[in-house]
Image 1 (tube, rainbow, N blue to C red):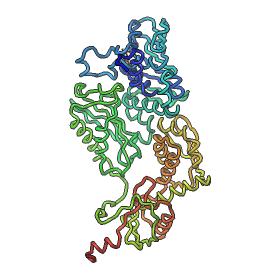
Image 2: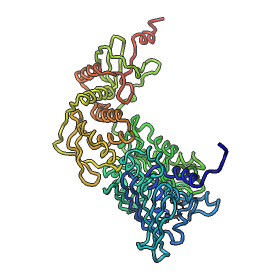
Image 3: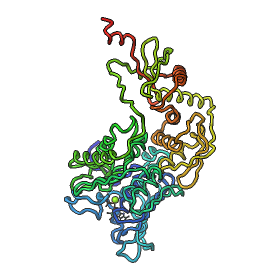
Image 4: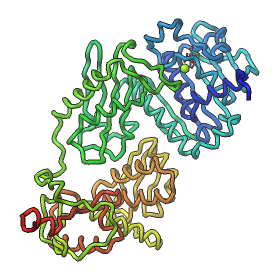
Length: 546
Ligand code: ADP
Ligand code: MG
């Protein structure tokens, strides 16, 4: 094919596809516009995962009547003027791409009234072209309604996940911006249901209470490292509040929601040695610095930033969290698991092996954490939690495949508060969870009553266990893996904990059950349940063989 410049329609579609990746991107762009225009109240409504409808209403300064059509032209913006402005961006938008991109991918209605105008303007666009332009009335502010998103992007439509998944993404975008702008009132209605409502009173803790629940909000520690050049502010969890996913890390740079591996690393490094492996903190941090210190013009979605001096930013974040954690009460994990460190050359970790176990004789417990056992092939150190997890995991899956899950009704139902994201997952997986023995009943805004659990489940913090379970299901699309995730989560919650002393009888019983599992040498997460020191290695170490 000869080289030629693409038709305008093709160009605008390609560009639109970059800005509008999925329905949540539309919400993000429209909310950013409202925030840039100084809104103090932003209402978002979505139907059918944002495909049938997205509506964002704000009470901001509005678009002047003469500019409304212009706002839908590519690269039309009121936020920057000259090239030098690119180095000093203080607004969330600046590329003038969002409105034209959305109009290229959907049908759009705008109703806006600027403070300078007496009447308001209504515009209806189809395939990027204005079909209707009339005067109407409304109070000051802007409403943008997006219909039939991606109707002309069949490929994109095909790659979207279920409406519930897309709703989850939308809920997440709103939650993030609510966390970044506590002084703004946000309302999110998904398919007619009020999913998120923030008070807009300026308190970050109050927003956290809405997004993650009151229990978490109460425990979060405040970061307030304010400097003339670089400030780090926000809330972070004490080590005792760790989560099993990185989904609770929120970073903002000059209040722009960003994905930043640098900031994630800085935050997680501050918790080094304070969290169990596989656990992550809850972090909500805003880094403020002069606009010329960052470059946000990295990608059309503006979710990435480059720091001019990344080392300084890393250190500031890590130190400000570290300082607060140093003052926090120490985590109540266990006493002295570090007192025994097996020399790596001596011990073999039999992780990947699936071979069955020999008969083992329990000799005792070490550091309230490991069971020492003797077998025909030498000494075995068994991680009691990992081993019990394996036993329970296989038991649950076996009961499930025989449809014989034992269910335990709760005498006192447990009230569970869910984040918008968790609620979306629950709605999607409620039936499956029911088959595993969980009975959860809606009980007001994002509250649920847990009425029954799988009988295998230990007491303890059931609300927390259910939330962890829902988090583990967020990313999982593969049906068979989902079942494993549920079994894994239940097993992890119910297994004996590290730090718990066991009687000789309990240890013998655990080892006996472990011997009967299909994969005794790994826990359901794939980590080893045991390490093994063979008699031959022992002889070698003691110089008994040549
Ligand atoms: P950008 O945000 O990068 O400027 P957009 O395409 O998102 O580009 O918006 C184009 C322009 O339309 C903005 O610069 C702004 O002037 C105006 N605008 C868009 N949304 C709103 C709104 N909700 N309130 C006031 N003005 C708006
Ligand atoms: Mg914009």
